[in-house]
Amino acid sequence: MKTIIHRLPLGHLWNSEYSIFVTQLIAIFAKYQPDLLHLKKGYERLTALKPQLAKIKAQEAGNSLTSSLEQLDHERNILVKGIINQIKMMGKLSLPDLLPYVLLMKDFMDTYGKDITTGNYNVATERTNKLLGEYEAKADLQTAVDALFLSILFDQLSAVNTLFAKLFIKRTEQEASHERIDIRAIRMETDQALTALFDAFEFCSLEYENLDFETPAKELNVLIDYYNIQIKGRHTRRNTGKEISKGA
Image 1 (cartoon, rainbow, N blue to C red):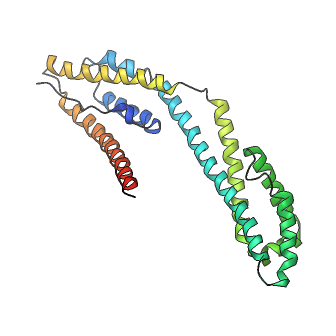
Image 2: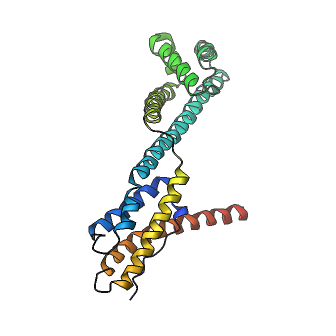
Image 3: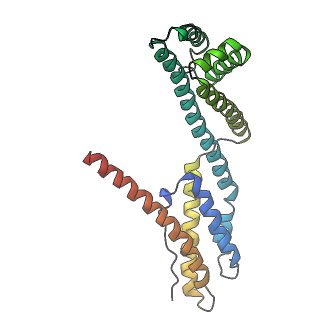
């Protein structure tokens, strides 16, 4: 009797999970001795692609850092704009004692805050470093920040800017150490190797009925079904979002 391996719409897997999925499949096949199941050729063709799959994983890690950098840069912009807006708002209050602090901070942000929200990553980080360095070095600025209730914003700006700088260096190091690859080409080749191995598995299950294909198939199908559920869930959420949007 033919043993069936469930199939997965491989193109719907995210790059970040694709190499993990294939590596998990390889590990399952390895447990059941592909040579004994007459699957050596197909198995070796797939395992030969492991170095390429590792490159996908490394490149996706860099992409993840890029996403984190974008979020931190966005938060940095919000904080700078928040500081400027807070200064403007405090200047509109009928509190004469605050006026010197408002004028000091307005001049300070005009000098050091410009280009942070419009410059590239390097410019924004450099300008923020100068702004924070000046603030930390001068007691009158610190007094003004306290008086205008800006301390929490400056503290968060410092934390975000420090983390941004660290991640930027880390991403630069990763990009220098990893070559840019054609993920689509690697996935297409791997898809073909996977399909060929699955087909060979099912064929051999008919040809060699004395061998146990059911046990590895069960484990493979549990894994494949898990990813099918993830893909189906994402598809459902996207469609639900579209329906809500249309209804609005």
